[in-house]
Image (cartoon, rainbow, N blue to C red):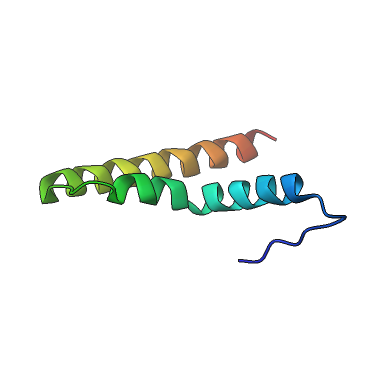
Length: 67
């Protein structure tokens, strides 16, 4: 990942970097790896994430179907 600093504006570059890291899920991954996760909890989390992704996909399809 490469972030360009324009006009020595390091604060803006930091905001851009944080936004990119958050979109890629780096912070979520760090929080998740902080402690050991039981295999059953891992399965449940993955199932919940799949359901969440599917709901998000369906809501986008409904939104675009209306317009």
